[in-house]
Image (cartoon, rainbow, N blue to C red; front, top):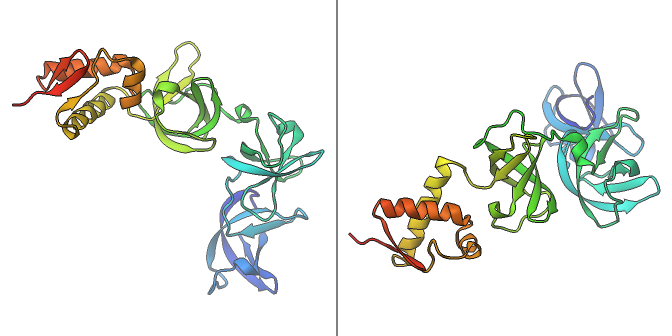
Length: 277
C-alpha cells in the first residue's frame, strides 16, 4: 500500500467493521461508515490510504487537503514539545515535527505546508520549510507559458508563489489587482525568467502579444461603456493608471499610442475619447 496517496483498490472481502480493499499484494480496511451502498466483491473504489492512531494502514473516501507530494493550507489545532498537529481534513491530524517548522507554529495559525512520507517512521507528516521541496529556477518553463500558482508567502511589494506545484516564483505588485491570501490558487503566465539566476516572475494576465491585444480591447470596451470618454490619459499618474487598469504607465502609453495611430481615439491632456465616425 502506498501510504499518503490515492489508489484504485478492489473490494476483497467484507468484515463487521467495514470492507477490506486491496491490490495484488496487500489489503486495507475501509471503515463501515464510509462504505458506499451496493459495494460488492471485485468492485473498484478510489480511496486515500493513510495510517490511523495505531499506525495501521487505513483507507478513507474522504479527501485530505493535500496528499503526499502536494502543498496545502492547514490550521494548527494543537502544539506539543515534539511538534504541531494540523487539521488536513481527516480524523487523524497531520503532524509537523519541530525541525520541519520554518517558524514555531502556534495553535490557531494557518500554515502552508508540504505533505511528505517520513522514510524512517513510514508516517505521513508535513513541513513548512517549503524551499526544501521546490526547484528554485525556471528550468523547463518558457516566457508566456500558462501555469498554475499557489500563494506561499508575502514580502514587500511581492507575493511568493509555487508554480505548477514544483517551482518557486514571484508575483510583483503591479501584477495583482485583488486581495490574495495564503494558499490561494490562480491561473497565471510566466512573465520573465531572469538570465543571471533563472528566477521566475509570473503574471495573472497573458504576456506579450496576447496581453497587448487583451488590454487594448479592455480599454476600448471601457470607453464604449462610458459614453466614449475616460478622464485618464498618458499624462495621468502611474498610481491612477494602475488603479484603473492594473497596468504600468509604460504599457498604458504604448496601448494608447497604438490606438491613436489606428485612428480609434483622441488623446487629451487628461482624458481620452473615442473617435466618432
